[in-house]
Amino acid sequence: MQYKVLGSLFFSLMTIAFSLSAHGTSEAATAPSGASLYATYCASCHGQLASSTKKGATTARITNAISTVSAMRSLSKLTTTQIQAIATALATTTSTSGSGTTTGSTGSTSTGTSTTTWTPPPAQMPPSHPGTIVPAQNGASYVVFAWNDLGMHCANSSYDTAVILPPYNNVWAQVLQRGNPPKVVTAGLTVEYRVVNNTLSSNKGTYWQFWQYCAKLFGVNLATDTGLNLVDPTIHNGLAGKMVAKGDHFQVNGVPITPIDDSGVWNPFQVIKVTVKDKSGNIVAQTRTTIPISDEINCAKCHNGNKNPMLDVLLKHDKNVGTNLVNQMPVLCASCHGSPALGTSGRGTSGKYLSEAIHGYHASKGASCYDCHPGAKTQCSRSLAHTAPDGNCTTCHGSMATMAASITNNTKVPWVNEPKCVTCHAGVAQVDTGATLFRNSVGHGGVYCSSCHGSPHAMVPSRVDIDNYQSQQYQNYAKAIGSCGACHANSKGEGLGDFMEAHGSGKRPNACYVCHTAITTTDTTKWPHQFQWKATKGSGIVSD
Image (cartoon, rainbow, N blue to C red):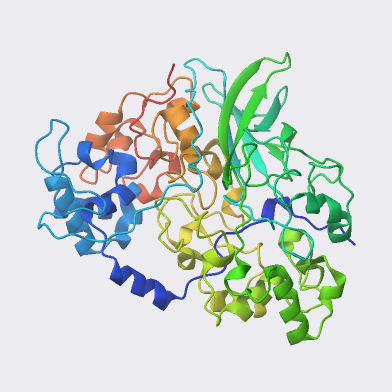
C-alpha cells in the first residue's frame, strides 16, 4: 500500500456547511447588540468599548469610514441597523473616568431593550493561553514568525475500525534578519520546536492504536510517538525536534500530536515553542504559536445505532454499497475514495473522492459543518473578522450540495482548489494570489501572508489567545502585524500612530503620498499592500 499522508493538506475547516436558509434563520433570531458588534468588528483596532478611541462616532461617520478607508472595507457587509447599533453603543459607553453607562455584549441598549446575542466563545477545555508574552527586544538581529499551515487539523481518536485521518500536524516558520532592508534568511540558522506540556502521544486515550495499525493503514512502520511524513519520507518527527529548511522558510511535517496534554486535559489548541539558534548555538529569536489538533469528528450524532459509531459507519456502508469492510478492519477510507489530503491522486477505486462522497451523501441528511469539522467544542473557525456561530463556512465554501457538485462536475479538486481572499477583499492590492493558495503565498518583502495575518481559519485577531501571541509579541497589539519596526531596523513610521490616525482617514486619502513619493496616484486601491496598512496601536518592537 502506498504511503498516503499529505501533511500540508490534512484539514480544511470549511467543507461541510450549514444550509444557507438555516443560517439566515439563525441570524434573524439573534439581533446582536451594538456592544457585541463593536467587540466583533471594532475592538481589535480601537480598543475595548469602555475605553474606545472612537467614542461618539456617529452613524454617518462610521458609514463614511467603511466606504473610504481601505482597512475598513471588509465591514461593508454590516447593515444600516447594525452600524446604528454600534454608534449607539459608542455614544452611551462608559468612559475611563467613569461617566455614562456601558452596554454589555448581552446587556441593554440605549433604549433599555435587552437583547440576546452571540459572542465568540472562549477556547474550550481550557483556554489556550500561551503564558506570559515575552516581547521582542529593541536592537534584536532576528525576528521569527511561526504558524500552523491550515489553522486546524483533524484526527481519529481510535484506529481499530474506520479511519479518516491520522494524528499529523505541520508548522512553518520564517526568519527575517532585521535591517534596512530586512531579509529572509535560512543559512547559518537552526530552528527547533517543542510542544508545550505535551511530550508523548501514545499514552493518551486510545491513540496507541495508531502505531499498532499504522503499517496496515498507511504502509509505514513507525517508532512509537513518531509521525508520518510525506514531504520528507525518511524523517519521522516527534513532539520536539528540529525543523527542516525549505528555501525561504523552515518546516516540520507530521508532528503526531493529540489534543490531550501531559496533564490529561483535552485542548484542541496546543502550544508550540519555536527557537532560532545561530551557528554557535546562541538563541537569536523565539516565539510561540498554535499547533491545533482535534478529534471531535462527531459521527456519533447520526451513527448512534452501535456503541462504536465508526463500526456503525462500516455496517451501513456494507449494507448500502455491498462492501465487506467490517471483515477488513481497520479500514482507511482513502483506500477506496481518493483523497489528496492523504497523498492519493484521482478518485480512487470507488470512482468518488472522499470529500465528494461524504458531502454528497450527507447534504440531505441534516449534517452541519461542525458535525465533522471540529466541532461543537473546538469551534475551529476562530478569526473574529471571519466567523459566526456556525463557523461561517458557507460564505467561502458554499453549501454541502454545492461543494459535492463542484467536485462531480470537475470544476474543483478537493484540497487543491480552495476559496480565495480576493473574492471578498476586492480592490485591495496584492490580495489576489492567483492559483497559489493563501497558505503558500508571499507578499511584501517575500514574507508569507500567514506570517502577518496568521493561519487560515485563525487569522488575527482570534478569539484564542495563542493565535494572537506573535502580534502582541512584535507590536503589542492583537491584529495583523503591520508595525514596520517588527522587521525594519530603522523605520520612519514608528511612533506615528496618532499622525496616521488623524491624517490617513478617508478625508485625506493621500496622506502617505506626501512622504512616500514613489506612490504615483492618490487612488489607495492601487497602492502597494504595505502602504494600505492601518497604523498599529502598538509601538512596534518593544523591550521588556
